[in-house]
Length: 267
Image (cartoon, rainbow, N blue to C red; front, side, top):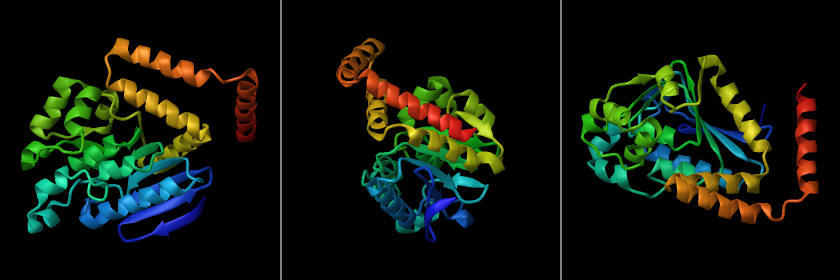
């Protein structure tokens, strides 16, 4: 049950019990394409989430079952002649990947349909992805002649390996949800009717973790990911030595009791 809801033509925001915000890209008639207005509104929604202390985690999905998002609204951009600028501008009101990251909270992507090109990049901006069995993924940048500017060229190869990334990017071919799961793009695949509930349940588990600890842990993972393995291990040792120095047995016992109480409440 949602405790607060804001709906517009372009983005829907519902704050759920348990500290989770459900954000829905709401242009199903256009495959949730990322128009300029939608991207600006997505930034506004993410800033509202950033400022709302009651929200600890986010689920991002698309309206309908056909598309998570088909990426930039090329029809709109083609008429305005500024496709290149829109694809590379770092302004979070223009760049939806930066808009998502600006919320400063963990984001679970619930991929309900196709995630194409810029839409694929938006999916990869999420911390964790769960896919509907109807989801499909494609990088069609090469087919339309636009270089990726929201991170896909670097992120995808790190997830699936160079050969698979090049196969997707050089051909524009779709992969289905099961293949995306096998390749490590998504964590798991569920039925369309289960998708949002599964994503919300996962986000609720994330929201249970202490906010400051979660932020620090996320920063540790992200910063180490770009390093060589030995350097990353040294980085973890340095960060954990500082962070764990003040943790007492009493602190751990309080957290253990909270976990046990939560488990009993769920029985």
